[in-house]
Structures are given as C-alpha cells and as structure tokens.
Image (cartoon, rainbow, N blue to C red; front, side, top):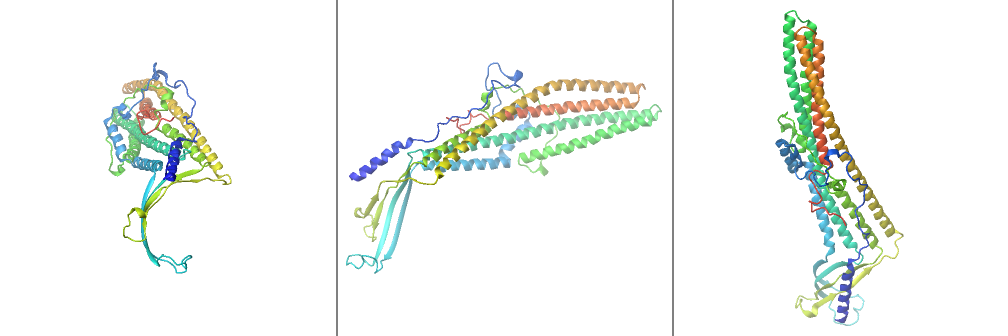
Length: 481
C-alpha cells in the first residue's frame, strides 16, 4: 500500500506541473497601419466608429430580386457547400485533438485453452503445473500522457486555431460568392438599361427613317440621306443583339452561383436604376476585425506559434501513466474474486538521447513556418488596405466623372434635337443628323456604363470592408492573445 500511495503522489505531482508550455508568448503580428484611409474623403467620419455594412449587406441596393438570389447562394451554391464540408472536417479534427487532453480508457478480455510443451524449461521439475489449462483475463486500462512540457496543450491550441481559421475561411468563401453574384447582377442590370436605351433609339431611328423616306419621296432629300438613315437604324438594331448576347452570359453565370441549371434559369429584364449606397468610412484598424480572410490568416499564425511549443517539447522526456487492473484465472470457476485480481500502477518515461539533429531540425522548421505565416498575414493586411483604397478611389473618381458624363449626354441630346430640326427645315443634309445621333447614343451609353461601374465599385468596397462579417460578432473565431 505504501508503494501504491507513492505512485499516486507522483502522478498527482505530474498533473500539477502539466501547465508548463514551451511555446513562445503569442501576440498577433503587427502590420503597417495608417491613421485613416487616403481615399476616404468625405466618407471618413469625424468621430471614428464602425459604420460599415452588417449582415445582409446587399440590401443596401434595395432590390428584391438581388436579395432573393443572395439567399439562394447560401442555400444552393456548390462551392459554398464544399467549403462547409471542409469546415465540418476541420471541426472534427479539432475535437479529435481535444480528446488527447483526457485519459483513454480501454477494457479487454481474453479466454483461451492452452497446452504446455513437455519440453518447456522447468517442466522437468516436479510441480503442480497442468499440461492443459485455461487462461482467462478481464482487465481495465488507462493511457494518459502527463503533459509536463505543454506538448499536448499546444497541439490542442494549434488544432483549435486551425478550426477557427477554417470557420473564417468559410465566411470568406461565402462573402466572395455573394460579392461575385452582386457584381454579375449589377452588370446584368446595366445591360438591361443598355437594352432599353437601344430599344428607344431604334424607335427614334425608325421614325427618322420614315421622315427621310417621305422627304425623299417628295423630292426634298436624296437617296444618300435614306441610306444613311437605314444604316443608323440597322446598326442600332445590331447593337441590341450584341447586348442580349452579353446579358445571357451574365445570366448563365448567376445561374451557376445560385446552384441552378442555366438551361432552365432566367431573370426578367429590369431597367430601373439602382441606387449607389453611401457607405460611411471606418478606421484602418477596424478593417482587421471585419475581414474573415485576415482573421483566418491570424489564426494560422497562432497555430504556427503553438507548433513551436510542440516541437520544443520533444527535447524533454515523455511521461505516461498506464494503470491497468483486472482479473485473471485458469478456470471459469470463481473468476471474478479477490484472489484473482491484479493491478499495475506507475509512470513510464521515454527520453531521446541522440537523434542526429532531428528534433533541432523540427524546431527550426516550426519557426520557419511561423515566419511564413506571419509574412502571409502582413501581406494580406497590406493587400486588404490596397483593395479598400482602390474601391474608394474608383467611387470618388466615378462620382466626379458621372457629373461630366451627364452633362455630355444632355448636350449631345440637345445637339441631336437641333440637328433634326435643321434637317426638317432643309438647312442641312442628313449627315449632320447622323453625326448628332451617333454622338448622343455614345454619350448615353457611356453614362449608363459609368453607372454600372459605380455600382460594381460599391460592391468592391463592401467586399474589401469584409461585407457584413465582423470578428467581434463571430464567436467561432478567436481574437488571439
């Protein structure tokens, strides 16, 4: 009993000391940070606050069709389904690693009938050993590693960090798919507006051709004017088919994103303009809390830091507790009785004395992996700032350009009206009308194209800001030490 108490005391002492960790103290890597976004302009609030989009960010555009499609992406997109399966896999791996914190309990039983050899050593000595006997064993065993150096705890910490990174990866994939859908939808709606403009233009050119044909029949206009009017009408009609062909490509792309067969999927045309959302600014430091890809990268840095502790622990002995107890007898009679009990209790240790530098190489490798993940994290942060600055610059420049485009379109439309009036009065030939019509159509289409580009830039900005995701709202992603 004294020996058993000594063993129990030693085991308890080992458990008490198991809080030691050889991993470096973890701090999230620092990245170059500016006081505010350079392209924020009037969008930068006087009192900084997190005013970025939250939740269903696409509702900023007030389009019920877009809202419905975005919901379908979450439910039916195959790429997202694969990301969900990968996330589930990582969570299961993390739970498997977590199990190493606790003892493994096993139970075993064996029943055998045995005959001893007549020539077995010591059999020649007279004794009571039978030639044929039973060997029945029933035992309960426990296997537990005493984590003196923090190897197991660091493996668990790394596994949890990897699982958290997978959770952020899932959010990143979802945001990417939703932003891609919104971008395709904006371009499709832009083509709907182009189609409506061309339809109106075809109607106007048809009327102009009728007028020119009537003037030709009356001997007022030449056949050249009629040919020019026919050319402009046919060109406008051809551009309609070009727009329809391009629209079909975006419709097919949207179908795949929402998990539908392009052959049976369609979106009704709608040429009404969508609003450009006013997305208020935020501080650059807040961006780190709003980008799931940055959160995933930071968690991988934390995992790499924990793996350094795992590698360092190999320098020290591995201590295990393997108590085992049960019953053993040579017959089935009175098997589970006190005289048939056996037990074993005590720690075991294994220490590597020579490995030709293997452990040293593993520690160096883990440190290099940490340096790699740190560099990836910093690079991703810098690229995130670039994406935000790009989107802000586009939006601001497009806003200024839009005012000029609208002025140009109004001027071209007025010129076209004057040219047609002068043609009716016989002051000019139809060439001046054709020139004015061409300029007016080009100006209108350029203005519509710019509206689409502004909408796409706003989607790009929302995506660069992390969409509706926030690390502070997502409890599945850790915040680091």
